[in-house]
Image (cartoon, rainbow, N blue to C red; front, side, top):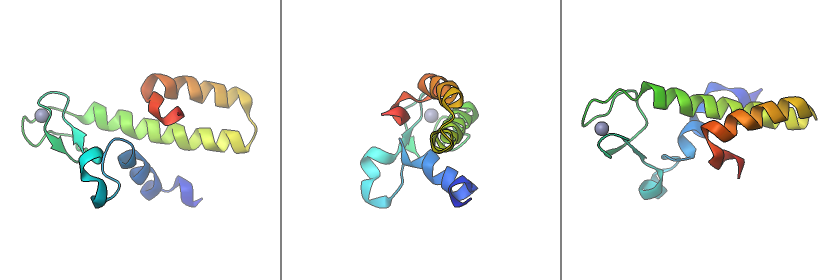
Length: 97
Ligand SMILES: [Zn+2]
């Protein structure tokens, strides 16, 4: 399915708190939680070299959960919707709004 493709997940991963288009640079950049440097989401901070790999993984997992949640809704699988919603609420509540 197209919407489960890695490209879709990457776009979803980057569209929430980071850049999805160049026209919205200001609100779309990721900020390093250590030094606050703005940058694209990447495993190592460009300025302070902080290890951001867990942040990257959390963003990717949230994107996967979001896609799985859409599928569970299409399938009317309420148990799975509940399970996915709970995990997504802990990881990235902004995706539930
Ligand atoms: Zn940094």
